[in-house]
Length: 183
Length: 274
Image 1 (cartoon, chains in turn yellow, brown):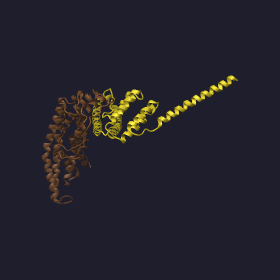
Image 2 (image 1 turned 30 degrees about the vertical axis):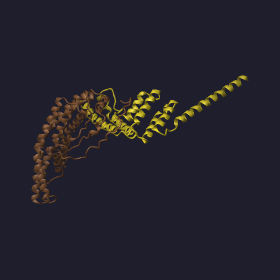
Image 3 (image 1 turned 135 degrees about the vertical axis):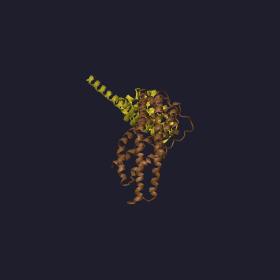
Image 4 (image 1 turned 60 degrees about the vertical axis):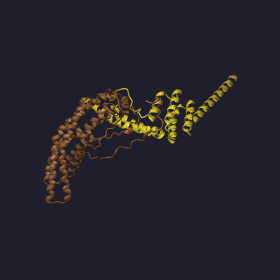
């Protein structure tokens, strides 16, 4: 009889613990879900706080929302704010250093992340030239957001646009020359 | 029909030759393998093509001028639509004869032009393949295009292949100057210049070859037209194309507006930057 009572008590306690744990998890999920708002500084602080409390899986959404907030308040210093935010996230381990670099350069640098590689151009880029250029085109749109609309850095955006045109021309010529060499 | 096709092709080759009158996009100075894009033999090829272009211009200039005068006379005499007028038919035949003379000169000069263009194209092709294709990574290629100065775009024009408006031989002289200043390390991306010239030469080679195949047939058809004294729109188009090359008549839009100059605080450099 006592053993039966003890079993029932143990089950009850386990259920209670499980209930508390599930409740906490749901609460944490709710805390992750909310939209960021206010000033860019405030939104970044909010995002950092959430990322530090188990919301890492929402990083991409937070980053996108931060860009939207910054777009509404363009400022040349915004690139620096984003750089520092990304560096802090890389330091805390919410994202990797490589991801931080990729995001910063994609939105705030003239150079294209899509045009990278350690092998020669003939073998690495030419076979997938159309895909590379398409990726660069998409990246140029992100640079338009980061450089032009978020940072009001018109000169840098035009330089990126110009670089895209130059790369397109040079790749067309180079890849045609590579192809001619194989014939 | 074949007259129209031939004339169109001829117009195309003239435009293709004029294609060399585009504005290659200057970029910043680059170093390393790009410098070897223009060894002496490539420069010699470009110089030779300049000379051939000059000779072609000189031999066509008088003919074009004469044809201009004849066309003016035809217009002023209200010959358009005046069927059966003997005087008008005589002027039309004279225009046709001058046109045939132009075709003769073209067919005589084109082989030399073709050889010269092909030689430039081939030597540039080898350099592009070796230097940019095989000895450069996409990363270093991009680095060489970006160069050192972030404000260079404010002073440069965008890459605009296919833009005409400059005399052919002048265009080649511009190429020579671009290459020379680039070799001296002054703010031009030789990769862009080399690519631009190479693609132009490749296009021009194809069109010259096609035109040479068609030109004899065109001339024959024009000789037949002579008996009817007709001035075809194709003839006018070809003459207009030749004039663009010879006299550098500017067509097309100006360059896209340059971005505003950056003022105020210096650019921020992120530790995350590539």
